[in-house]
Amino acid sequence: MQRFLSLALIAMACAAGARAGEVQVAVAANFTAPMHAIAAQFERDTGHRARLAFGSTGKFYAQIRNGAPFEVLLAADDETPARLDKEGQAAPGTRFTYAIGKLVLWSTRAGVVDAKGEVLRTGDFRHLAIANPKTAPYGAAAVAVLKKLNLFDAVQARLVQGENIAQTHQFISTGNAQLGFVALSQVARDGRIASGSGWIVPASLHEPIRQDALVLARGRGNPAAQALLDYLKSAKARAIIQSFGYEM
Image 1: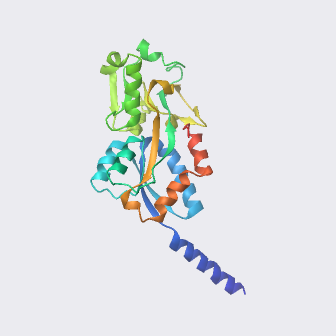
Image 2: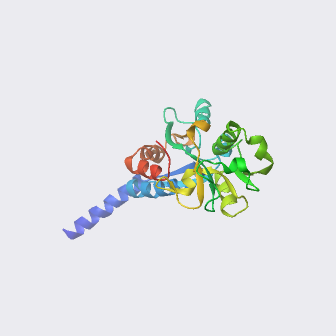
Image 3: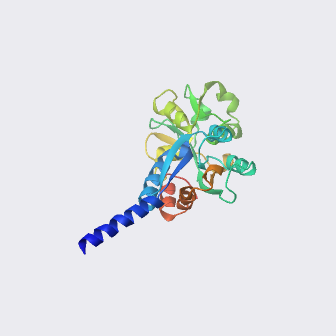
């Protein structure tokens, strides 16, 4: 009887392994920390493994158009997924908003950034870091904020651009820029800034940073791809996303 049960358990494990799959995922750099946590939980709960690549949404768009083997895209905006959908580069009907991002003006040093971002007007800094506004939606949002505050011309000479939001965060964390605009998810835990000083930018100062996900054309026949998108809508994933300061 014990031998029969052992064989049955082995058979069940083999069947589960056969059903488990792998999915290649392009992830916006701002979503790095939450996606690592979600991918680990996703594998534990479903057996599917998500292979993650992180970078700027604009560059991912170019790579996908040039045949990169991604099966799912988690973008930092809603325009890029909509464009891929329209161009036939995605599985129809899979696009949805998985998070709404928040922009923060941040410094590693306490007391540098005040609660209203007035440091931008006083100019008490040498360099202000932003992500490349041409390829990174958070960079575009940062430029929109500076223009809305009529400060873009005043600070333009002091801007340093990261290739993506991850490199922008690195510029600030290493001290190469005294402050800069990053995603709240990069510096927050439970929706609050964990270290340094920061100003969470009011949403009224820029267009909403709606972050859309979709299954790409290459992932259309991969059950793990759709399983990942379904998992992003689950209570477990949503709790992780919100813990990093995103809205839903």
